[in-house]
Image (tube, rainbow, N blue to C red; front, side, top):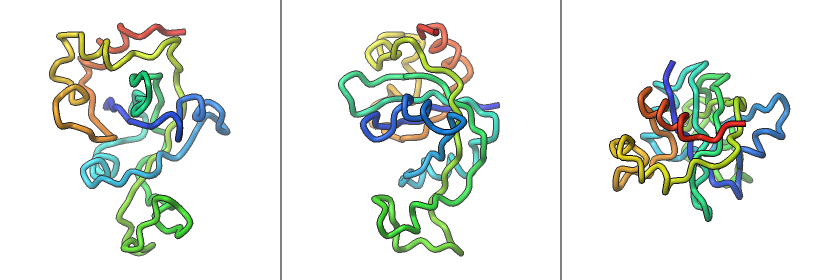
Length: 155
């Protein structure tokens, strides 16, 4: 099993939105960065655990945990001309973009804020806090995962 951090803008899709879906499960669509796509396609696997990270909001941070319940498959939004994520260069025969399905595992009682994460010296090598790294899909080491779990206020 591997650990991941998936970023989302809560005004677009939040952990509360995930909680409200049927079976608390949703396709993680809209990834339009090749490096992030490659991680989804080549490394994210069924059963992996994911921190859901709210970004581009007043208090960015980790809101909870999801589990990958379906491995990578073509992101259907790339084929829909009405979608914000439409890609006219993509085709059903040659899909460029992938998505996975995630299911809610836990909502934290409080966000583990980016400020808290940056203040922890044990997390200074975490991809999230390294300068210049803005990937929406990021690996998390088992050590960092455990540190972040210990920081979380869990229900």
